[in-house]
Image (tube, rainbow, N blue to C red; front, side, top):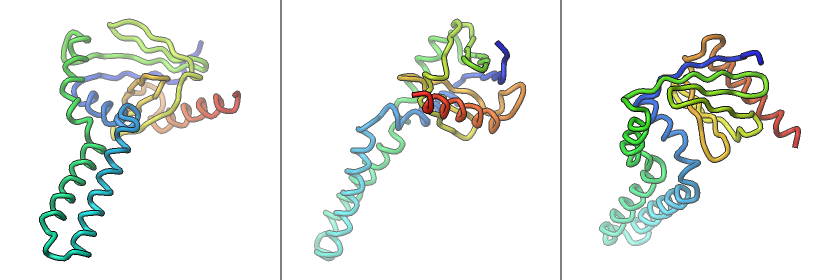
Length: 175
């Protein structure tokens, strides 16, 4: 079992925040899209009130516009309300403010090791990739794994993403 990529990631409050941001659209599901839809409709309705009713409807228009903006904010950045709880829960699990983990990516599997134990995954379980500013989240079934882009011992984050996309495409071809 030859290691193709080796990644070392330090999990802390910043990586927890980026992880939550990258998984928000997956975890929030239909709720997120409903909020975005309600927000768009409310903003549009507020604007239409001004256009058709004129200055007499300014109060209604402002109310609908603000309600729409709030719904869009929650749909897009609602994860911000859960980041603090998630980070505290993770740090309690880690037994401190940070967790260092290593992930070895081989040809047929990848293995994550930390003081919490060892987890082994097959590439056919990977459902997608999400890229942040400094991290890549690997979506695995109902869960996810975060790796730092600059944490690779050999290779770069771009080479890694190309490798993972190839594994995901091969999985789809085999079905």
